[in-house]
Structures are given as structure tokens and as C-alpha cells.
View: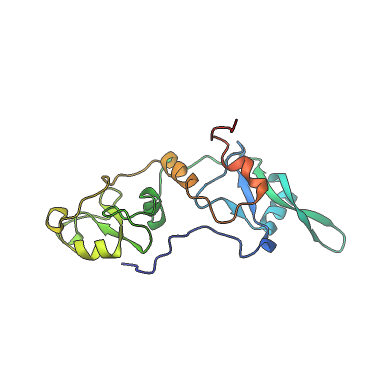
Length: 194
């Protein structure tokens, strides 16, 4: 089990000098919320030059070549719609997102690993329905015992999430860095303030 697993997965720019661009699908929704769909400014400029995206918002800074000066894009929209995935990949990250970065036995955050509810040694498989996020103390307490013999209880039964469920959960965990120009596109389905 991975004891030094990070609970922060955002591709946060090391500094504002990197000028990441938010990438939106042709319907003006982010390709993904968690991790947030971001491109480097170089990729955004290249895609705009190749006429694959429209630039919707820009930073105040420029990039220059000997003959050209271009404002750095902060939000780009794909010209061709990318069909969203219908199936959620079974990855450690998606598992932690499904479980809201909480131990499914005690509810604590941080120092997460994963646990097989039905231990592998008795035939448990590595699947959405049998693996949960667990903190190290709970994982050690459970070991290769069944839930009944360990004295632990699940907060909720494990199941495969839908793409929509993971996208909704992703909105609850915004990255540490959000540029002001991105805000109108990230939470478009939330209720407007009065």
C-alpha cells in the first residue's frame, strides 16, 4: 500500500509565469473538472495558430517572436466537439475522488491508500465494487480480515460511479489556482447569486 500518497492532484502552475489555459469543449464546458482540463500556454497558442480552438479570454501578458506579439490565451474553446467518455476508468485517483478523499471506514482525510473489502487472499477482486479508499490505520486494522472480523464498517457500499457523478464530485474539489477568467466557465451550472 502506498503510504505517502498525495491527496492533491491538481496540475497547479508552479507560478503564474506558466499561464495555463483552461480548455473547454465546443459546448463551453471544461473537458474535465478534476483534474481541471488545462493546457500550457504554448499548446494553447499552437492550437489557436492551427485553427483548432477559439480564444475566449486572454492574460494581460504577451509572448513575442521577432515578428509577432501575441496575447497569451487563458481560456480556449475547441472548434470540434469531443464526445465525453461513457465509462469511468478504474484508477487510484478516480477511486479516491469517488470516495471524496476520505477513508471509507473512519471518514478521515489524508494518508490515503486503498483496501479490498473482500480480501484478495479469499478471492476478492480489484474492482469498483470491492475496493475503497482507506487511511493507513484502518487499512492496518482490517488487514486481510473480513469486515465482520475486523470490527470496521463501511460508510457507503462501493460501486462504480458514472462519468456524471465523478464530474460533479470534481467540482467540489477546485484546484489551488484558478484564474479569474476561468470562473465563468467552471461553475456554469450552479445557482446564480441574487
